[in-house]
Image 1: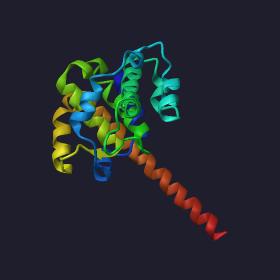
Image 2: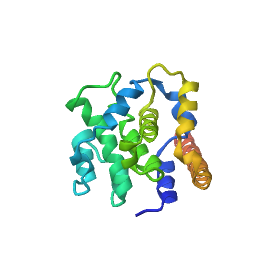
Image 3: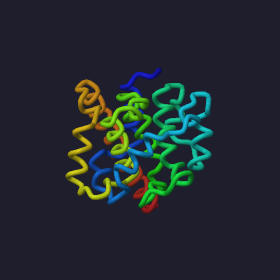
Image 4: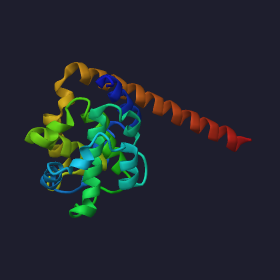
Length: 202
């Protein structure tokens, strides 16, 4: 099983800064609707024998990044629960608006790589507060604010339930990973601009 710190490092390289996710979030589905759906994950989605890569391919037509870490049961379950939220739109009823957009895979990976290393996904199914945390995490990284909540309210409520922030050692490590990932992104952008400028001057 991978170290929580290592999984958080992987997540920080995949995700944009949290502040950017909040800035881009728009009104989304009702939090209660997502939380209720979380509590009704079908057993096959939780079956460790089912390939996460195959499940991801079936649900979203691509393999989620967290599939590379599916040997960790927390990651596998976290991603599978996120995939259930997306699959349930066909099997139960659609969310309004639908999270099945360009950020859907990131929302699945957020559950698997940001939340699951800190809180066992099985707790999301049995504990109301952890379920709400999972629902809020999924919505944020799918690009949404819970219906009826403005940005500052949604952010405050999410931070109050964020298990990562409650673990000071992990929170510090995650902040450091996020900072390094942001520096790497900026360097890559600067190199791309420099290469484009060189190319256009030739």
